[in-house]
Structures are given as structure tokens and as C-alpha cells.
Length: 376
Image (cartoon, rainbow, N blue to C red; front, side, top):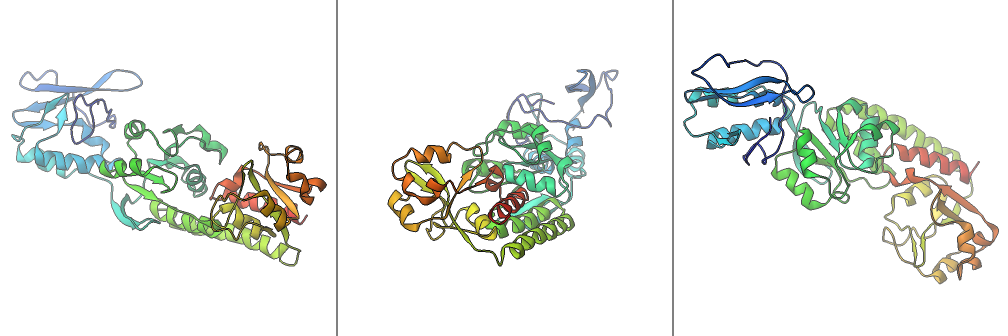
């Protein structure tokens, strides 16, 4: 059903979907007036009607509330204020007690309150089945939890796992489309405070859509966020199993490189100006566990600017570069100052790929790959 005017259920133009059963054809009853008709989106056939008799309005829209608790709550609130709209007609306070009780006792999904990683209390469904992942790393983690079928949409730039690319997108990470998200009727949004714009997060809260935030830092943060996402999605056992497997792989890497010499590396993110990775960067932790050491890990910034002289003074044994990136050893050889680095002259370079940018299970693949390069 499409709302033709703004009301507490949603803005004008919002399509509210329901199930295709439990409806009545009442065209033969002359004493009952039709308020709206509902169509199948595929066939276009009219299959159900909204109708009223006296001061009682029977609404098809309630059948969607099983999957979208937010609409159930809004409808109850709307009934109390006489603000529900159907085909642009405002429902007046003449609603009978029967109608109010009918809408108030609809079978809404059971919910529970959990605390997300920034300390917010969030009311989430017991078993969410219409999840939207607003950050690619969250998508990877949720799929790894076995919840792929419960994900109805993702953000742009999803890379892992490959099957996640088949999901619909709600737009950019920082500023997803509110209209697209509303049209999908999610029962849970999953995001990150430093990736998604605060204004968008605030709007989701005002609309009553549950949004659960994770904020992973370092490799340990990956495991912590998997636990959190397992709690939010009702998949705690799956999260425990996944974390156990990932921890075993991390421990195996640590054990293998423990007795090997530590390799000092410098990772140029930009060569002019010189920008690199600092203490707060996720990849710094990956390097350490893999048996290396970033020469800028003591700088208390995530992406610090540093002088060429400081890089030379720290004397890295090797360079670490992004595989397929714009910065290559050949380019650095042509840049002033860079040819002074022994690592550039000798071509001692290791490579990582985009997986290191994802604080999610796929980062452990990148960790194993880098450890194998450091210590074949």
C-alpha cells in the first residue's frame, strides 16, 4: 500500500508491504465503503481491500507487522492519537474501542534489549530476518555468522564475501539512502559510529528503526564485534564457534613466527606528502601479529604525516605496499629522497591486499598471507 500523505506510519509515497493472505473481497457489500486497494507488485492484480463500516476501519497493513515491529509500535501510537492515514484520509478519533484493541493486539515480533559497543541500549527483534548492513566489514561478519538469508540489503563497496555483492545496496557508507532503507522495511540496521554519519544514525533512531553499532579496534576488536553481532542477531552460538575458529588461526600464526626475526617495515599510504600508518591503524596490529613491526607504530595517530627525513632515520628493513595500489617500488625510485632508503634500492617489498582494510573475518586471511610472506 502506498501512503498518499504523511503520517506516523511514514512519509507520503512510502510503500508498505504486507502478506498476500488473510484478506476479504467486500465489493458486493453496498453498506461498506472501500478506503484503499492493495495490489501484488508482480502481477499488478488487486487482491485485497481496506474497508470501513460505521466508525470501524479494518486495515490490511497490519499483516506486515510480524516482520517490522517498528510499524507495529507506530501504528499503536497512531491509533492513540487518531493519526493513521489510509489513502490520504486521516483516521478520526471516532475509532471504536474494537478497532483500537484490534490493532493493539496484533502479533508483533518478540524483542529484547541489548547494549551495543558504544553503550547504547537497543531494542532488537529476538530473531531479525530483515537486516541491513551499513558497512562492508559488518556484511562480511554477518555472512560468516550464517545469516546471509536474513540480510536484505548492504552498503556500497561490499567486497567480501563474493555472494554479498548480489544483495541490494542502500547507497554509500557515510550517507545511506533513508528512502531506500524505509522502503525495505528492515527490522534491524547494523552500523559503525565512525563510518556512518551521525545525522543518518540519529534519523534512524527518530524513525524507530533499531540500529546496533559496533566499533572494532585491532584484531581483538574483530572477535569482540563478532560476539556483539551474534548477540544483536540472535546468533550467539554461531558467534562463539566462529570466534573459536578465528582465534585458533590467529594463535597458529603467532606460534609460527614467534621464534623468527622481526622484520621492520614502513608502509607509505602517500609519498607526497608522506602519509603512513600509526598506532591506531588496524593494519599496524596485523603487521605485529604476522611477525613484523611498523616503524611508525609509536605515533599516536591513525594516519600520521611524517617527513622523509624521519623515514630515513627510522631505517625500515622493507616496505609494505597495497597490492594493485597506485604506489609501486618503481614510482618511489623516481621520487626525491626515496632512493635513499635501502629498502627502495634493494626492492625489498611485501604486499597486502584490500582485506586488511576490513575489521572482519576476512582480515584473518590477510594476516595469514602476510605472515607467509614475512617468514615463508
